[in-house]
Length: 212
Image (cartoon, rainbow, N blue to C red; front, side):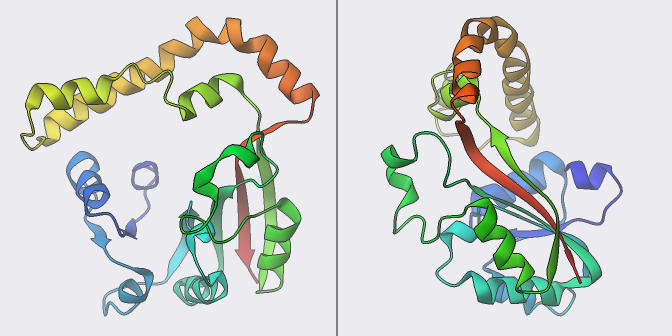
C-alpha cells in the first residue's frame, strides 16, 4: 500500500488467500494473486519490475537459489531487491521452535546473506540488523495485543468482514500501536539499554541489493 501511495504500479502474490483478500479489500490493490512463484511468473501479462520485495520468504524455501534466479528474471536491468529475513544472531534464537523445519529450512547471518546475493549478480547497497527492543519482544509474544482483533471477531460471530469494518479495526490497532509505546516504553527502556549494551539484536535483518 505504501508503494501504491508512492506512485508505483504494484503487483504481488502470496500463498494465503486471506492475505490477498485483505490486500484487495482494505488497500484496493488490483494485481495481487493467490499463487506460488512458479505460477506467478508464467502469467502472460506480468511486466518487468523496478523493485521486488521479499519479506519472510527465503527462510522457508528448500532451494533459495532457484527462487533468486526467478527474481532476477523479473527485474529490470539495475533493478532493486529488498529482502527481510530472521536474523540468526537475534536474542532468544535457541528457544524458538518456529525457526526449525518444517517451518524454516535456512538461517541467515549478515555475511551469509551478503555473500549469497553477491555470488548471484547483486550488489548489496545496505544491510542492517534490527536493533534490540524490549517492547518489540512483548509485541512479538503478543503480550501487548490487548485482544483487539479477537474481540471484534467475536462480536461479528463469524460474519465476513466488510472493507469498512476491516479498515476500522486496522485503524484502531494502529492507534494502539502508536499510543502504547509512550505508556509502556519508559518502564522498558532500562531493559532495552541493557540488551543493546550486551550486543543483543532483535529478530529481523533487512537488505537492499541492486542487480548488476
